[in-house]
Length: 112
Image 1 (tube, rainbow, N blue to C red):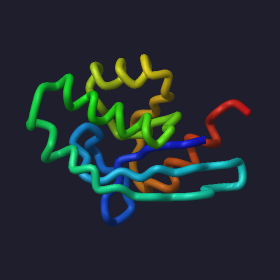
Image 2 (tube, helix red, strand yellow):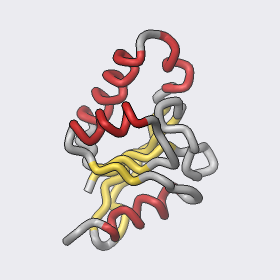
Image 3 (cartoon, rainbow, N blue to C red):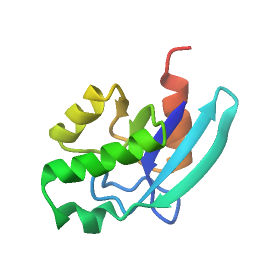
């Protein structure tokens, strides 16, 4: 499973999704995290650089380019949740603590 999670430089869940400056893409298997790559997306500074639609499109393009299947976050606005669900992505909200642990918990909660 390919998961995207907003992450701080300390490896914790960033409480911001649409304004996150850094996200991680994790490829997980039943055995654990197969790969973990972090990206400086700067969504926080880019958020107000255009319309809400253009910001959502920027995030959607990133997720599509990285073949993301599930997004994990603390919280996000309903328009963003709706967009992600329309893209067919799983959305897990309420995540806190370690980003890697959250990725594994989401993997464990998916049906086999």
